[in-house]
Image 1 (cartoon, rainbow, N blue to C red):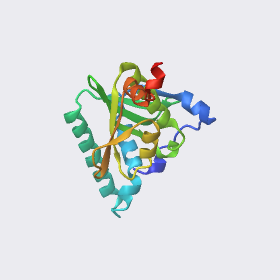
Image 2 (cartoon, rainbow, N blue to C red; image 1 turned 180 degrees about the horizontal axis):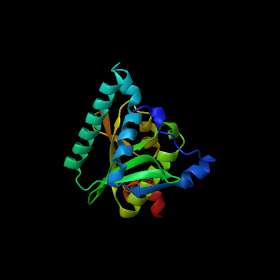
Image 3 (cartoon, rainbow, N blue to C red; image 1 turned 120 degrees about the vertical axis):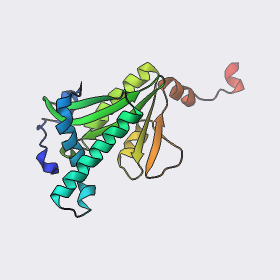
Image 4 (cartoon, one colour; image 1 turned 180 degrees about the vertical axis):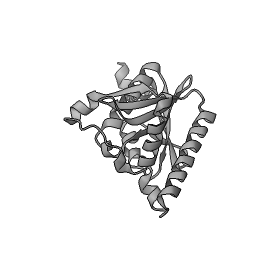
Length: 190
């Protein structure tokens, strides 16, 4: 899939973008968009293989199906939401909620709308909901991904040793507040 085949709606300005982005539950009819999104967000790395277009397409479909099967096997109750702007799909947010944890499985945005704060805003909304529910949030990020810096700014910390991917965790709000509380000295008791 050619990354330029996905044309986003033209938003009037950054603040309007963020207000215009809605999340809705994915439906079976969204599968084609999700496959095209997967292809667009992996186009540069797949192009490096030098394969013909048909082989690239077959590989993308295989990898997309494998990702979906993996998520279904390990997170059967995962929630898939489609990001929309002006009723046009522009991205995907896939999360799995358990008793004490919200796992961010995937957040993808069409390439032309990346680096404008849209995915960040969707992520902030999810983090607010997680804080309200007292949930920690976990994710995996490629060690060389620029998104890692965003996750760190949002309070995520690396967990364990990195491989190709780094596990990251953001503690629930109440736990983050406890760790930020200044140490009390005996003089404070007087």
